[in-house]
Amino acid sequence: MDHSYTAELKKPERRFLPKDFAITDWQHLEPYFKDLLDRPIDSAAKMEKWLQDMSELESVVSEDISWRHIRMTRDTENKDYEQAFTYFVMEIQPHIQPYADQLNRKLIESPFTKDLDQRKYFTYLRSVKKSIELFRKENIPIQAELSVLSQQYGAIAGKMTVTVNDQEYTLQQATKFLESHDRSLREEVYKKVQERRLQDREALNNLYSTLVSKRDQVAKNAGFANYRDYKFVELGRFDYTKEDCFSFHEAVKQYIIPLVNKINENKRRKLGVETLRPWDTEAEPEGIQPLHPFNTGTELLEKTVSCFRRLRPFFAECLLTMRSMNRFDLESRKGKAPGGYNCPLAETGAPFIFMNAAGQMSDVTTMVHEGGHAIHSFLAHPLELSAFKEYPMEIAEVASMAMELFSMEYWDTYFSNKQDLQRAKEHQLERVITIFPWIATIDKFQHWVYEHPQHTVDERTSKWTEIFREFSSDVTDWSGLENFQKNFWQKQLHLFEVPFYYIEYGIAQLGAIGLWMQFKQNKEAALDNYIAALELGATRTLPQLYEAAKLKFNFSGDYIRQLMAFLEKEMEKLYQAEPV
Image (cartoon, rainbow, N blue to C red; front, top):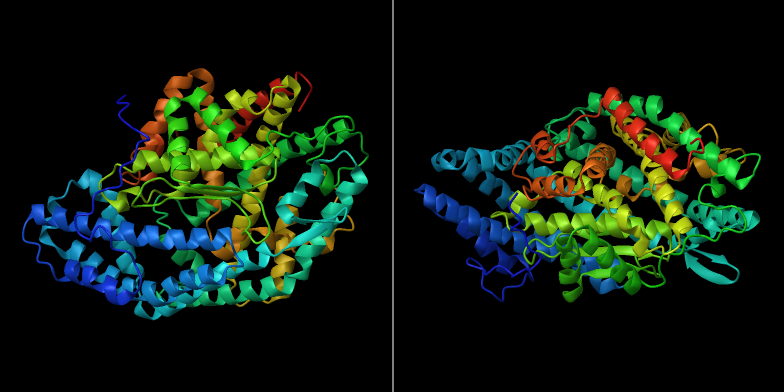
């Protein structure tokens, strides 16, 4: 395999826009769109040049809005950042969309499009045709409004704090108390966190109802029966259907929940409690300290660089390039939006990693996960067009989730004590398995929400509770917590900000487990397969990208059963012959 990839980035030289051009308003940006629209294309060479110029413009626009989003999430209390983001989505984006549609039509209607390399351009042209099919002028103002509305979730959630032992903590920071061996403290903090969420229950219900109603309108305007069907097309789900999602939900119930029950039963036994309560699942028995892999964001980054270097030096170099460009904001603080992300920056190439680290095991997982996304950004960056780098989420999440599993081999970087290292690996494999029911819950809930857009808040709460219970472990005792349970969906930012983006995690987790199986047999070959798939960006279909990684694009019950059998064996090794 050609190992020509590099973590050294040179900002591409602009050939269409002025070197110092920065986006301030539509008036100064429009001439470049107009140039592309009016420019005659009378040869294949001119078509290629036109595509390159359009790609340059797209990457400059994309990087600009990305930075506005990054600044706003880093400081949700800064009104200037919020206004800069809102200005873009309300005053610039709506003007871009009609041009984007006309440029798409110009590309598809040009006789020179057929001269393009069809293997390389197939997925891009397919996606352009999809955009033409979905475009409706009357949706532009609704989509602008939706962009602004969906950001309100971060502002509401970013203000949530609880007080423990007279000290204020963000909800992310407070979760560390759930690892304490003091069961009464765990219960107290768990209930405080849930009660704090309940304070904003009404605001979030109203926000979600508004989002659902406006999304439904967008779908109806575009001629779809519901927003789910619209969104499947918009997300480019060409390679699987809603029925595949339903069979995934069933397979989770059949083959994964029994394994989750075993994991929870093992936890209950270890803790020596009669019943396992929701505040027990992250805890360790008395005398065993919670895992504490790092103290500061700087230390987390240094240890991750060291871990990645041992896996493959190129991976570490990507993080070092990012550090030299100030592309990290890792520690949790008040006023910072919740969650974590890797934000690709289309023009400069090095992405930005944002997270809310609080010194816990889960932060290591988030860091290596986002690090996997970052490596994907580096590997796809050399592709000629910005559209070639807009890879589907079902492969993007393989990049991140496989990195969680690969990196486990070198987690002694974070844990010098052997028992801590074993516990960290157990925690990771448990998380790989136990996330599936939550993915199925969120996905199934969204199907119902958008199939019944006129539902009331009470109907939604009732349906959520029913679905949540359908995928819950029999071992966990929820009695007396029904009021909290009704509200759990509100902690999932994807529902508010990126609707229908969630089953990708389940599909990709299967791919990641498949790559880890390869890694267990031949580390270097597995890493080569991983890189071979990621450096293709979006230039192949999903099944072809999986094939490049020597994986099956498959989420049938039978395939899931095989992967779970492998994971169960790995878990048993870690539990040291103790039954899972």
